[in-house]
Length: 78
Image (tube, rainbow, N blue to C red; front, side, top):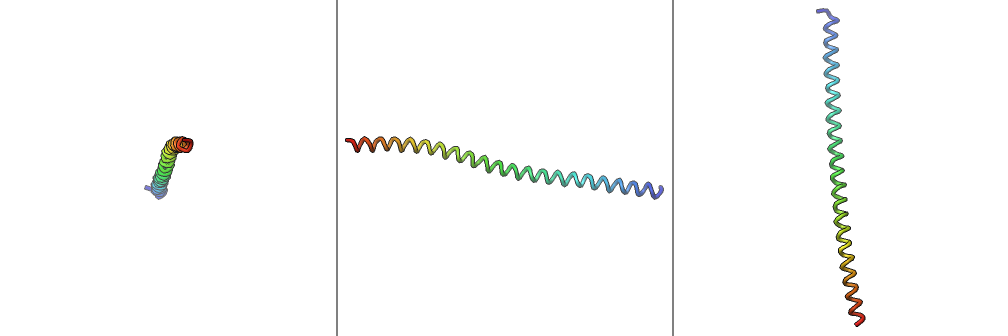
């Protein structure tokens, strides 16, 4: 084989290794970032769920306060 063919094969091998290495690195970085975003979304969803429960509790407490207020008014009147 001539030197030109050997240099060509070495260049091809280097190009392939570099290309696949870049693809692999990019894939790992993308996967890492997606996992981080999933964690943030999970935290956000937990906060939304907690706020929903707090709003339900707030409504219940408002009803109880209204009932107690009515009782106090009734006791004050007579």
